[in-house]
Amino acid sequence: MTEPSTSPVTPVLTKRWLSPNSWTLHTYEQLEGYTALRKALKAHPDQLIELVKASGLRGRGGAGFPAGVKWSFMPKDPVKPHYLVINADEGEPGTCKDIPLMMADPHSLIEGCIIASYAMRANHCMIYVRGEALHPMRRLTHAVREAYAAGYLGKNILDSGFDLDIVVHAGAGAYICGEETALLDSLEGKRGQPRLKPPFPAAAGLYACPTTVNNVETIASVPFIVNGGSDWFREMGSEKSPGPKIYSISGHVEKPGQYEAPMGTTLRQLLELAGGMKDGIPLKFWTPGGSSTPLFTAEHLDVPLDFEGAAEAGSMLGTTAVQVFNETVSVPWAVMKWTQFYEHESCGKCTPCREGTYWLAQVLERMVDGRGSEEDIDTLLDVCDNIFGRSFCALGDGAVSPITSGIKYFREEFLALCDQNKSAAELVGAAR
Ligand code: NAD
Ligand code: SF4
Image (cartoon, rainbow, N blue to C red; front, side):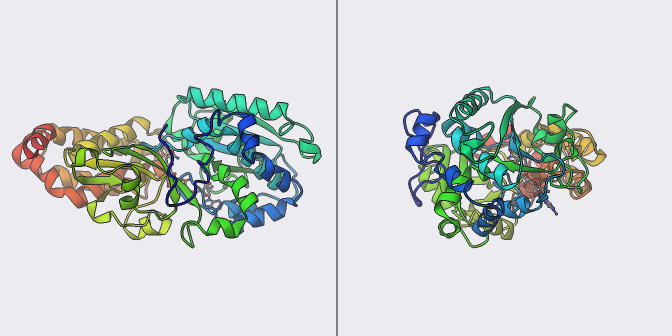
């Protein structure tokens, strides 16, 4: 695991990651672990919801919905059981923050789950882990067992009268099960496909009961907010996107890995943390938040990577999965690879995405192979137009983002494939 940054903020979420046996209860307790829970259990649940609202914590799964506001949608007087569901189905290409967090510091997630469940009057919490992530799954399961044995889970937690059970559940490796309602269907034992929203999960979620679905990093932030307070949390990041963030940096940098920095950190600053571009070969394009977010170029080095900054520059913050590509990479080829991923992962429920991603992949494969024509660029944009905003869930919109932004910034590369009838590999080779 890459050493998390100690600059420009004192690490928060990653502060225990390099401690020996950081994943054990013993180490966690030595480093202030479960102190926030003791404090939280003495507060009224509504005070905790107000605290999280005041902190401005926004969902770290990609969409940035205010966490405290989401919690406040849960009914105050439970008639049906309440559920907290943790989305640990980290699947967005390039995203690698929740899995390292669960590997290095699983108890911070568990402590966050207990506090959040107490605040939302939930006595059941499910952690839905991506199917392929076997090792994190084992580590988390072990940490949950440790927490039960120490009295942090189960009946009458720390003599508070509050009961909570946590179940760690393995998905089966479908990207769509990261979509919250598909995840809920999957948990119920059905085929994972998105549900119509509204109703949102707070009204009818798991087993049609009030449910909150939160991302791992969001919930792991909660114990720090309880201990540090909302003003402390707001000292980091920007006014509308406060707090620290784990940026996962992959691709052509010297030191790929996870880097914790305040919200709003720019790629220029992140590249410094990651040791710069690999072998000094210049940057060509990058994703600010995984492949579902429109591409950026070297022009965007100083865009603040928070929800507002990314949106103002024409993209999205997404999962802060920063994938960095240098000049040796063909944009149409990279776009084709992402499109093949979306074609494979489309759940098939709605026609624009199911048929559209198939056609996009066909056209791009032809172009990248040097068998395309200029008309194919219009065809791509036309199909994208018929998917974007017309699909049932965010996967469809995400699938077109690399294509439309790739053509916007690198149209000449797509044209060159058609004009010269050469494959992307031949053209990149010629340009080198
Ligand atoms: P969304 O904006 O529809 O919803 C975000 C959250 O806010 C959900 O929990 C939703 O229930 C809640 N919400 C939104 N409006 C609400 C309302 N009016 N009332 C009550 N609750 C409301 O976004 P989404 O479709 O859940 O997620 C899309 C994001 O997922 C993208 O930004 C993408 O970056 C991200 N994503 C992440 C991964 C990953 O691996 N972490 C993978 C794919 C996509
Ligand atoms: Fe399924 Fe794609 Fe439609 Fe989402 S947009 S419901 S993934 S077919």
